[in-house]
Image (cartoon, rainbow, N blue to C red; front, side):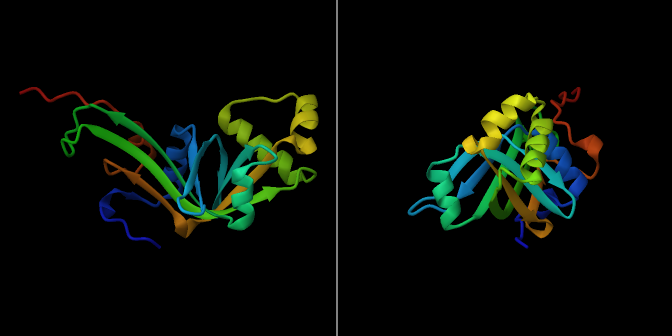
Length: 180
């Protein structure tokens, strides 16, 4: 487990991490590349039972797919910020929630039940629907790859500017300045 410098801001409770993920629309996935990391924003779906599993889709060919074939270890980061607010906690002028996780990414066989499950989870998290005929014609016929990123719980870290210990503390708020 990695050690966070400001340990009081660390979020380890899976329910709070799920709450943060519900606030986010995009994850950034960093892959190993030759000289520099290769980082891509992608939409996602997720499940968090014992492990945190992200589902994402991408094209059938490309640099990302080549990198996954070479080394499937990835880092996933997502965050939500509120800037230029009065922050009585530390006077910083912003508030944030974030999740960072380390794991491995795997392609999902388009002929498997897991492919359909991955698509269902992704679209549920994104509020989208796909007609069955479009799904079978476009997605399942290997025009779109589905992947899952498996992150062991000990490699999942949340962080918040303000200390959060319950779900009702998750929403970002623009605090009013106290009367002087």
